[in-house]
Image (cartoon, helix red, strand yellow):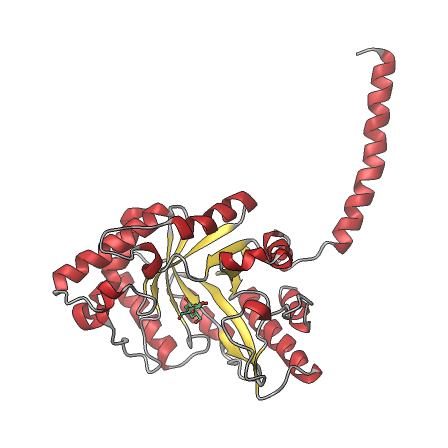
Length: 346
Ligand code: 9MR
């Protein structure tokens, strides 16, 4: 290199060395985000559920795509059975692929949701008059094709299989196959993708109690039989003022079984209080409580919000004394809950 050129290069390097860290430092001080906070706490992600119909809202989209806020995505609807196998053996992945492609483009993680659930099933499944072997085949084929198409992911293979008293939910699967549909689905998912993380996902298992105990027993029994099970998804559709006090103990009991846990559908609705300052402050404290429980348990790997703005939450904000469950309000103003999440990761 010419002497002058070398001098010039050195100058550029030095100028950069002086200028860059300064601007980085500014970013470092000001750049905040829920996913960044989760990562700083050594979690894999903080993510959100979404529906692609919401993406026409440009403000929504710009927050959703920001990896500082969200490092993971769950399809709120389009990977469910009614959308992915509307007719027997006919697999339609177009809607799910819109989500999967967004995830790829943005470099986020995807959570597959879900293989077997009593809800959002196509008519041919709900109204089917299957023998046990026929339905076993149907469950196996569905789980295999779905998990195989979306390989390399985490999957909610089984969703909401228990009643609140810990008994198995009566649905087409249980009524035809007893609880054997669970190992059938998990084994099919494992065959479809040996590297996928396979979960059972449920609600009202946030604190200790009959339902959580039943799920722990189910996990133990699956493990004893050599059935693949990697994690339990703790949905966490909660209500302000009613967050269980045993969140952390409960997660510790789950992970003691040799699995991981994740908070998979977090929202905390206001009930019998309007969205006034006091309600919002309590909501913030409750978000912080939930996040810090996950933060305290090493094998709680991440947290997913069940959408992030009150505008698109599944919980309707009418009547006005129930709802408002998300960290962003319907006008995309961050609520105190947002700060509660950040603090929970500290
Ligand atoms: O967010 C989903 C909503 O758009 C659907 O109408 C609803 C149908 O039951 O399912 C919602 O998602 C559910 C999730 O798949 C499983 N756990 C409870 C969630 C909220 O109902």
